[in-house]
Length: 192
Picture 1 (spheres, rainbow, N blue to C red):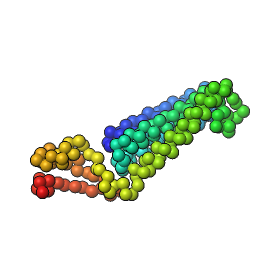
Picture 2: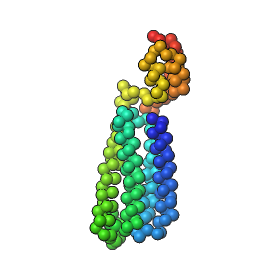
Picture 3: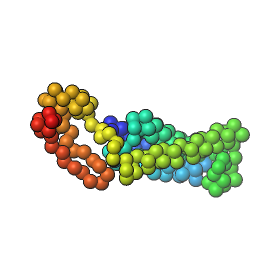
Picture 4: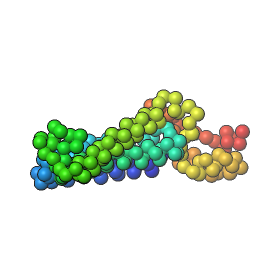
């Protein structure tokens, strides 16, 4: 959980930096308006990843859906920036007639950019639905609380109280929705 949140934060800053660098090169694109759009896509998608990474501890999904949400959100955000940048470089008008302003490109470039925009149009709502599902109010009830592996190992083996105690002290902060609960376990509560 914390690993994915930190990875999202890293990718958010990386995409934000790519957006800044795209803004510096904006005047050199064949379609300057689309270059501005690519610059803003990098900034906005990077900010989105930073916000999602910061709130990832609240997302309650199974491991498979968590990986799927992570992969689709990264593919969607980077794909959005890359497709818009490609459209700016090639000067295509695919799915963006306002920013194209009468420009056009060879058919294969138009098709490539259109496929990129369509895939982003599928990936971003899909990833948003997955994250929204993980943020639903009832997700905390019955959902496994994700902590360190040693926490689970200690609880599975009640005879190993020292491992459980050590891990519970290290990971005593548990989040359920907006309320943060401090849980303190003792050896007696683990033995009973």
